[in-house]
Amino acid sequence: MITKKNRYWQKFYKNRSFNDKVSFPSQFSIFTLSQKHNKKTLVEFGCGNGRDVSYMSKFFKKTYAFDISESAIKHNIDKFKSFKNLNFKICDVTKNFSYKNLKKLNKLIYTRFFIHTLSDDEIKIFIKLLSKIMNKNEKIFLEYRTHLDKNKKKVFRNHYRNFLNPEKVKIFFHKENFKNTYSINGFGLAIFDEEDPHVSRQIFQKK
Picture (cartoon, rainbow, N blue to C red):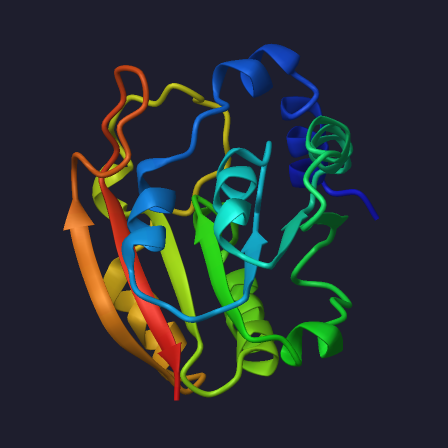
């Protein structure tokens, strides 16, 4: 069943002007790469137009990128077909996601501006999925809009956003046996055009 949210993202990523305009890697992708790690595989959930994972793939042996939008995935497969270590797949993380192959990998998980597109219940389902696919000491890097960003002007006004309290997100992760190893909240971390959203950057490690 295709939901209203699914239809919105399908239409959004069919917009070629957006895909061309926002093609550079985010500040958060650079931050993530700057953290020392020995992982061979990168997994991104909510890859959108592939702007981050295409850049980050240069630093990993294998990369897997997932998104609910069929139009986004089709665009990425075509645009990045020369990237031999980059794999794009359509998925809904809240429904019948097959994780067995990911469990075997030595990986880092990355998600930017993704969990705030989910409801609280969907976030809990996603974290349960992470708990299944992640091995001990593996990390997930997250960046998302906080509750302090709710009333600020947005470039993309029609996006569904769940403005999250970072302390609540910590509780969600702690319940699934993760520990928070890094957390910073504020402005100046995700500037785009004239928009400077209030975001949280967090790293969680599987116990």
